Length: 438
Ligand SMILES: [Zn+2]
Image (cartoon, rainbow, N blue to C red; front, side, top):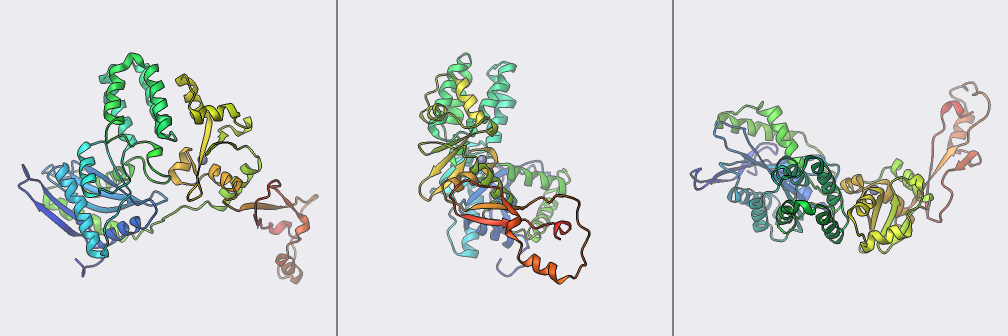
């Protein structure tokens, strides 16, 4: 293993059962893939996704895949395991092989925070066996929702008009800010849909009072995954680009897989561990902060989604934090109309529960609140003052005077855009256009 080319595929470990009572499982990886694993384990979030893909070979053997994402949500393959079945034993074997491969090359124990799988209980059992110290075993929200949409809602005879609303409520519950908020929402939801008691009981048993209950924002931290999208897209890519959607004879399939791992490793993608707010976002954040719209109650800060409507009322903020809702409609409308941010004391940081803010860990609201709380420097944008009259004719290209002027841009002709606030500032000067220069 140690000597070969870093992109070459190899087998970390193999399980030789008879394919019936005892499964077969071959775990493929490459040094580059294990390097991705190492990089993923060096980040704050340390996450891993597992999934199985079918219809790849004539034996009907599924292939289990372990993947991860970087901060910009790029996919990184870690290991592929063609197996005689997708079950507790094979998943456990794949996870143990990853531990083994990682130990071999990096001499470290594999310490993971989050594992994402689709909603299968045997995956849960395997993961908790191999990684007993993980923070959360997350369930893919996409699968939770699809299971309702395609099957359960119809099975429990929920009327067609109500199905769409229920799925919409699920989206809201997915994005809630705390377990208490979810508990309250679910209570009101059950009351509202009391006619579908069978359905709500089923949902409660399967996705709330069970190991598969972790499909909410509050179960994880910003910029981790909440769907198994990365595994799904890798699977789709393999089928599209490599197997041509055909079931190949097993030996040919293995050769294709080997080439596929080699090619994927050749790509030499860079693993991005954190996303920083770019200058445009920082300027937008400074703009939002200067409007002074934040309303604070306890550790939460609120904004209206439609900022032109002004501030959130104190009573609305209080009602959201203290959960004094008496009906589902009010709670739903607050969830839809408010941007909720939470201040975390140690280490001092801000979490925004808006969709993109949670998905990527940065958004304009977060930047604005960080400036407001003086956790971040404020960017002040200086814009050249507009000139009256027609544009001047172009000056000689190599004039010495012009060079001097470029070195010391006169501050007099600048005006500031963001005025209020006593926050420490960083100043950025926009480059003047050549035509305006003289
Ligand atoms: Zn946000």
